[in-house]
Image 1 (cartoon, rainbow, N blue to C red):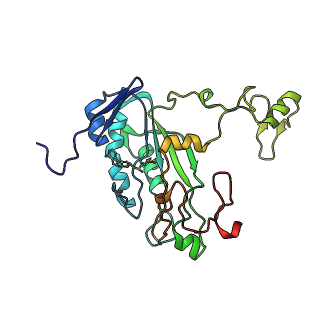
Image 2: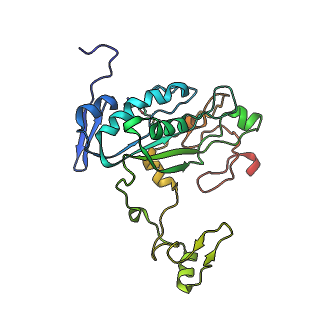
Image 3: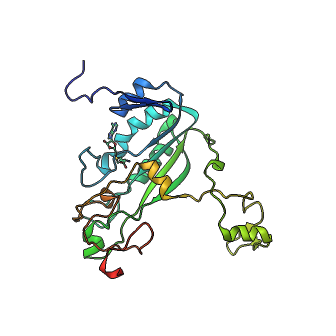
Length: 272
Ligand SMILES: C[S@@+](CC[C@H](N)C(=O)[O-])C[C@H]1O[C@@H](n2cnc3c(N)ncnc32)[C@H](O)[C@@H]1O
């Protein structure tokens, strides 16, 4: 018998030739609509462990792993053996302190080493660099100037097996002009690097394209984590997390500690 506190039952929202979108509580919806062992990929940007809650509710750092475990267990059951779970997580500051929460790393360790029969592999870690995030918390970044702004989300690519379905040839991008030149001349600096790595034609990859680096390009990362939201209130407070204000810069006039770039238009007086 449903009670008032139960989340509303999930339901199909719309359909396209590409599939069906459902709306509702994902924990309930996954169980209702998905068969065990049927899913190739879960990609999720769950609520982060922010110290200041958003409207949709956030989990505190302390209970985060416990809260996420229920979702992870269902996703494990629904995944195919060669399936993947990709989790985008913004970082958080410890409340009232210029120190960072470890919740993303605790979650990773738990899902990979403390989840019993359902333990995942870490297929690869990615880092979404989003220089458009606000330079917050203002107290540490702008007032006391003892921290730089946080502009990176971690993206954990977890898998049920050591060899999940993957093909980096689908995310290749063309060589730079300089690399094309080197290949043309066939005269790149082969041999042993100071760190001991040996560079040869194999380590340079196949001719024509190279694999993407681990740092996702902004266009890829935005697809992973949804569209950034424009914000106009730039007001910073001590415990306001940087990730809370990701997306376009508001009209705060706060000083950005990262150098200006294509993605990071200059607004601070220091840079003019
Ligand atoms: C960190 S936000 C993700 C934001 C999104 N990546 C974006 O950039 O717009 C978390 C989202 O998860 C949703 N959410 C929280 N709990 C949920 C649940 N049990 N089932 C489905 N969605 C949930 C929230 O409403 C919120 O939109």
